[in-house]
Length: 234
Figure (cartoon, rainbow, N blue to C red):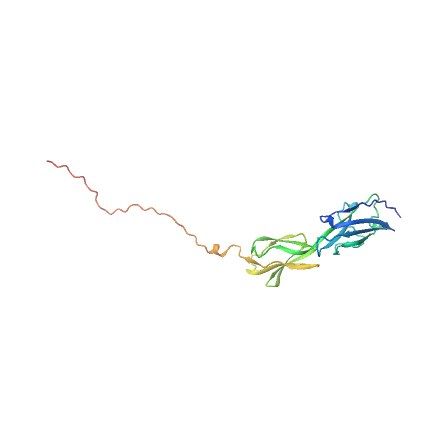
């Protein structure tokens, strides 16, 4: 069996790096045992922890790992969390030093920011739907709801927080529309919003008034001009 030489450098790197503490690793047989703690800055938070390696420049998570790790596991804060990494099978062709890092992401509830009750949508135009929260890179079904019933499946998209929607010209006008996001881990609906005409009806019906000033020549009444008075002969 080919011997793999490696050096384990412990890094807890993410936008929530301060959530990971006491990260340690040791070889146990042919596997690496990683232990770590997740602190709890706010009540009720859950986390997704992924492990990465320097062998592929930290581009994709390690695959041959088990335990308290993986995109499908929402972890509660706690101590003594464990990851087993089958390093020999994952790095069959690799020799040299290896660095790994743990990345922790806070899992927050989905929340739709736009559209809302404050900004109506006009049919026949493009509008942007924005949201936040949910699991990173999960697939979301984006649905249009009217009166509590699904009227259109708008898209199936990655959870990147935004998508553009071309509102159909023929869509029914109304005030009881909602956007609904559906995912394997949960779903959420937006505030009710209205879909309006592309051009307001008042502008369509507004008459065009042409106002001008007509200058007429002075009327000729046909009278003869006055003749000069002759001088007095006396």
